[in-house]
Length: 248
Image (cartoon, rainbow, N blue to C red; front, side):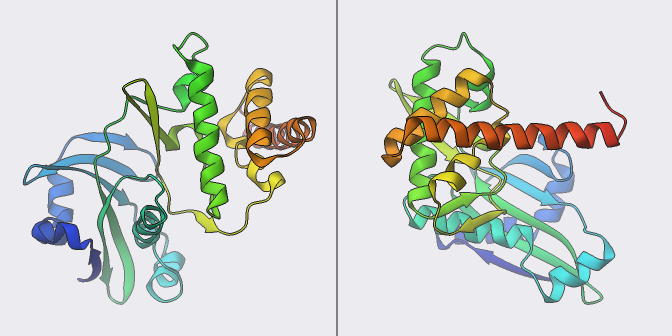
């Protein structure tokens, strides 16, 4: 089995960890998320890391990722480097590695330094009783607007993919799950549409759209209308898929 990898210069001293990540991953039981892919917290030489193991793709994508398209692990690493070079917060990337067999792409892993956080943005969006809830949401909108101002569009901007850290009554945000990103000019409509996957209620639509409009020097009512349209389209699409699958 052959492999390709890249490691952050700041972490050259744990290159052995990256090169042997399959063994470390298999032996570790500290899973923090498991769905299509799996995330584990692994400590090595005093460095706490989060390792994302991407599942082996189907045979067609094994060819595609081997010859025509960058892997999700590579894109995660390169996007993290790019974000941090722009001064935007995401967990510090350590490296990625891809494994190949018989000229086909197989497994891949992305490793980042563990980011300590208090909760994801899902908590203030769902918990109406959370202390300083409205302020946190407004600061989150500012963080998102700053991403857009730097031509960053996160294509999987769901409620679990923004981490929130509380420091001395201030709030720091860090974006994760970043393999699906576009670097492009983000206009008002596109920027507001980015919030649709958060699954918002009426009050939060108004709060988020108003805050974003103020930052963008745009009309508040137009922003609310645009976000409501995006929110409705997503919910109707999800409801349609549920009906197709026979789910309530």
